[in-house]
Length: 116
Length: 110
Image 1 (tube, rainbow over the protein chains, first blue to last red):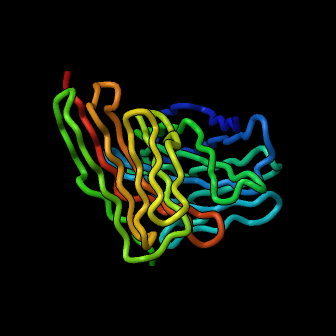
Image 2: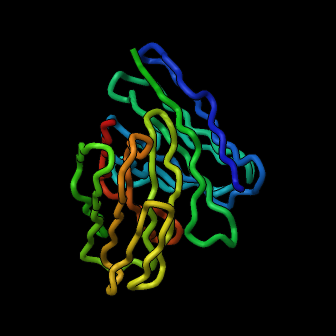
C-alpha cells in the first residue's frame, strides 16, 4: 500500500526559532500533498495544498509567510514553521494524493510540535 | 462552504454495547470517507462509500451512505476497548481536497 512518512515525529523548540517538517511518499509519486493542523481533541484542519514545482495554495486564514511549504519533488514536501510561537504548538499531519486514485489521500503519522 | 457535522462528539460506553455515529451535511458529496485516529498518530482510512444508499461492512463496523449522498453513519456492534479512538468522516471538495467532520471521540470501557 501507499506509505507516507513524516520527520521528525516530535519536536520541541524555543519561541522564535524555525522548524522544518518533512513529508515523504515512500513507494509512490504524489501529485499533490496536503498539510493539516490538528489541535487536541479537535479535527483536522487543512492548511495548504502543494503541487510539485509550483507554489502552495493556502486556505483562508493561514499565513503563507509563517508556514512555508516547499514541494521540491514528487516524493517530498516540507513545511517550515517560521518564528514559531507557543500558539503554533500543534499536531501537523501531511497527506499525499496518488495520480489515478481519485480523491484518496494517504496520511502520514503526524509531527507533534511543542514551542516553549 | 461545505460542512460536515458529526454527532455525538464524545461517547463513553461499556464493552459489548452498540453505538452509532452520524455525519451530516446540507451538501451532496460524491463520496464520504471514514477514518479512525489514535492519539499521536495519523488517521487511518476505514472505508469509502460512493453510491447513495450503499452499505459496507468491516467486521463489527457497518457504514451507510444516505440515499441523497448528504449523510453517512457508522454503526459499531459489540464495541471493544480496541475500538477506542477518534472517528472522523471526510468528504472531497474542490478537486482533491478533503473536509473533515469535527470527529467523534469514542471510549470503550472494559
